[in-house]
Length: 428
Ligand code: GDP
Ligand code: IMO
Ligand code: MG
Image (cartoon, rainbow, N blue to C red; front, side, top):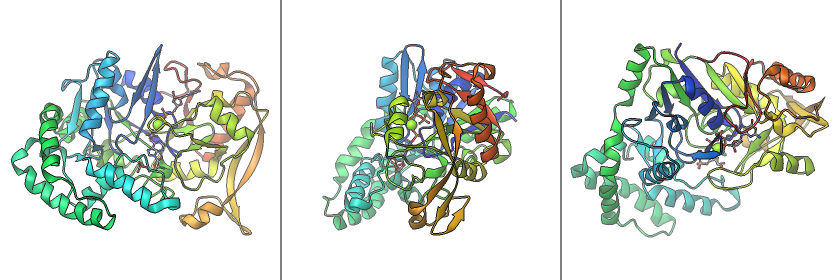
């Protein structure tokens, strides 16, 4: 198999960017297949830090083909800003190294506006979205009124499409006491940006199926994490796309028979940003220590991430629903100062026990974790590059995680730096 899929196995921010950057040295094509600029993927290469939101992480390596697949929701203004920022860092993004699928959905200014209005209307029940317009844009896609990237190549028919879209949006806005959308202004904005995007537009599914025939190595870069999946996550506190590995096929147009290994990127502890259940969340000094040592602040919104112990029941579930074949454990070094570590093996609630997260949100919010305690190693793993460099107790922690989650470990990451990575198994 010549394709590898990277997905987050928790609630996002597991270190997918670092791992995709590390693996992209061996890949020919790097593909985003879901989500949008709600994602924030950090790459540290020497003295330079790149923060990517919509662009695949392979974009920083010369000679690689990057693709934004049809499953992504594309905000063209955010994309151009990101390209500009990267160009300021010496990375060139041109139609030679970036292709945007013609059938990807567009995020228009009406979408973040609606995202913010809904969050405000939900009050204390808010989801804690990134307010980037992700949910409303996917809603318009499923509702068959959304605009797509190929509509930027067909400006003659734009006014009619905008009228259909605004028929729906203006009715909603009326209910939310918001002003109607200025139709002509929206058409003018889209008309102005269209020629800047059109050179990148192409037929991603054809390019990918040809690449598979030519035995090229294709690396799929997931965003978010499986617990934020619209079907398999902690609904309604989720994002609006599928995150599981099967989405790599649906969200790119590469036939599913070409999907190979799936790496589940997994923090050695757990974090979450935004609202929603989080059984192993810590509200004490140990949680603060995880946040401080792990620099747990959102890459996209700057929000403080909630921190807690590793949840093996949750990751085991993500392995099964997500199609994960191998784990990549990241941020092991963040645990270097702990004398004892806790691992959640299941949950209890009112005398009942669960070895998985039941779907009911009310139940999820009441689950109490069942923990086992394991010795910490209290020494430095930061920067380790081989398995043998790791202290025996760190090796024991990793083996225990792998046993409980019922999945082998392929890679371990020990710092933000590209090369501080332990390879246990060949990937491509
Ligand atoms: P992503 O959304 O999954 O790509 O993850 P983010 O980039 O949002 O957050 C992960 C953060 O952890 C980034 O700041 C990375 O530079 C950093 N990181 C990744 N791997 C490691 C690691 O092994 N150790 C440490 N200390 N930091 C890491
Ligand atoms: P990466 O790719 C962490 C969360 C938001 C919110 C929920 C819904 O960097 O791992 P949305 O704006 O998608 O409608 O918000 O999902 N969320 C993320 N959390 N990492 C991300 O991406 C996220 N993308 C969305 O905080 O709880
Ligand atoms: Mg992130």
